[in-house]
Image (cartoon, chains in turn brown, green):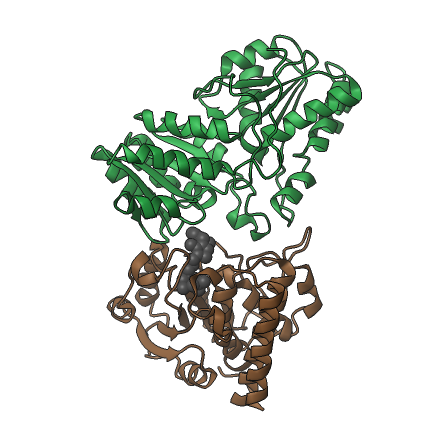
Amino acid sequence: MISEATISTAELARKSVQYRRNILKYIVGAKAGHTGGSLSCVDILNVLYNYTMNVSPDNFTSPDRDRYIQSKGHTVEALFVVLADQGFFPESDLETLCRYQSHYIGHPTRKVHGVEQNTGSLGHGLPLSVGTALAAKLDGRSYRTFTLLGDGELPEGSNWEGALLASHYKLDNLCAIIDKNGLQISGPTATVCNTDPMDQKFEAFGWAVRHVDGNDVAALQAAFDALPLAAGKPSLIIAHTVKGKGVSFMENQLKWHHGVPSAEQYEAAVQELDAAEAALA
Amino acid sequence: MGELTPTVAAPGVAQANLDVFSGTLQELAATDRDLLVVTSDSRGSGKLVPFAERFPRQLVEIGIAEQNLVGVAAGLASTGKRVFAVSPACFLTARSFEQIKTDVAYSDNPVKLIGISAGVSYGALGSTHHSLHDFAALRAVNNITVVAPADNFETEQAIRAAAALDKPVYLRFGKKPMPLLTKEDVPFAFGKGRVVRQGADLILIGTGETTYPALQAAQKLAAEHGIEATVVSMHTIKPLDYDLLAELAATGAPIVTAEEHSIFGGLGEACASFLLQNGFRNRFKIMGIPDEYTVTGSQLEIMNHYGLSEAGIAEAALKLLKLSVMPSAAEASRVQQ
Ligand SMILES: Cc1ncc(C[n+]2csc(CCOP(=O)(O)OP(=O)(O)O)c2C)c(N)n1
Ligand SMILES: [Mg+2]
């Protein structure tokens, strides 16, 4: 169910730059955050919330809203920035991120309006999403469930238990997205615990799989438009992304997994993003 | 032992217990090729990058899969390897609880489980990352020693003792630098609490990173109120040092326990259970994290919020000292919270 209100691809591209700037702003303010993985996944959240999903502050209590569950909870800054832009809460709330007595902690929590599930321990999003997708089938509802996983997260066994059950129940109302940025904390995902070829593994588990450039909003629109990728099967979108995307000195650098920019680095990053935005106009 | 003085290292000198852990492990690994460290994308937070560089063949990377980590570690240990399985305490003892119970403890595979960034060390990352359940959960599992070293000295001693023990052990570490509690003349052994200060008026019992604020509280009480407290580093939660507890409780002094853990099922309740069942009726207070949605903040802010601080522990002690020995029902219900 694509939302009626349409947004242009150019507008989406502009939003991505604005989101990146805000992610850095609030990470610098909190002196903490998962920078690289927020920058790699934010285009995905952008397209989901602004284009694909039927969810907003107006329908958040409706049983028919689309569900988004962020399994890679540590990149909560991307989620909070997008939810603020959707009007779930005033953006200025994010000035309290990680502060004493704030509800805005370093992971998704339902204390924050717009968040579906408390995550942060990896490997929980897919089973939770299988549950909400299964409930839609049981109740004959048409909402869809989306969940975002990290590539380093995949070795958690719970993912594979969820993947198996999703195809068993033919959950074609479920879409999992893997933010395949190729890095985790200790090194490249391929050397820490290799999960390639990802597509073949999921296909063998009964999923329909599509690869996409996960930092290209137009490509993401097209991929989500194609859901379900196959009738009677859960869909997996393997989003090929760049960790730290949009800030040249952060791209593909391990240390930016949870690196916090210094004042000078922040300034340099904002300049780069400003230039990127100007180039879009 | 009256002249025991805490050798509080100058700020910047104290190391995190985890740094000592990594250094000690490297020392042991140099002469023991069968010593293996097993990690789950956790070598950085475990301060094990130097270990990995020096002994690449003695570090087994599992990927982000804590159940697999403990299962594989148990399998490795069953072949005679000396295995240290290192992962954040929150995931290691919750996600992998059944592997700990069955593959390690029940099957008696002598894995050393190292829970890093324990308690509320992860601060504002929130409850997924806090381990406020690990003492309670593991106390209920047969055949595992549960230890939370307080300072760098206890850490080094605990690592060596764990390596030498052919039994399952759980060691719990925070990540902030910890000043030394005492000169190293109070010996360390699993199951034996260390008296790090002596006083007749009050007994303060800490474990892991709450021992230092307990000691600070004792110094504050002495300086400001002339109250002299005995302070115990009860690093081993299981087996608990019943002899020491009985000896101290026999003085009749009120007892305050402090732990970076839920008030349910940890150090405090372990002490209370022993004392109550053995006829002791000391005034008693358990300090820890209450049964609520944990407040957001840094580790220090969270600990201060719940009174796990010099001021908080001193205040609780003063309140307890003012209580009559057998509180009236009304008083008791007021105090209970
Ligand atoms: C169960 C669990 N184990 C470990 C962690 C600690 N952790 C947080 S992020 C992370 C790396 C995640 O890598 P990836 O999934 O690739 O995320 P991304 O690259 O998108 O940031 C780890 C190990 C966790 N949050 N949950
Ligand atoms: Mg990754």
